[in-house]
Length: 158
Image (cartoon, rainbow, N blue to C red; front, side):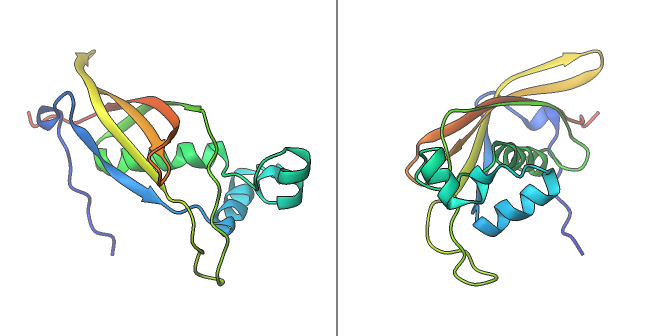
């Protein structure tokens, strides 16, 4: 049975408040699964020789759509079941590299992807209680390579 998420309410949110971080490990297995689910079979995401030789990358890279989904997960985890993610926009300014698999179930050593965010504004419009957020992703070195904005609708205590 899944543990219920704590519900956050519009009245409890303050401008400048940080959104709880979400740390993810992108493995090569995750990229293959994502390619199948999303239908993005660009060899840049699963074929190392193609990435290095033809794209001049250090290796295969994490899908931008998968990175956006990680930010979506961070936001929906934060807003709870009664919140609504109205909009998210992302810009990819750098690359993330997946960890190779050590075994069928365990990724090897490498970088982590840390999803972060903070509240930038609150407003009421057409009976909706809106919260504007800045969102971004960092690698383990603290380098920001994906940034964006999100708008959520939160329930009120009233």
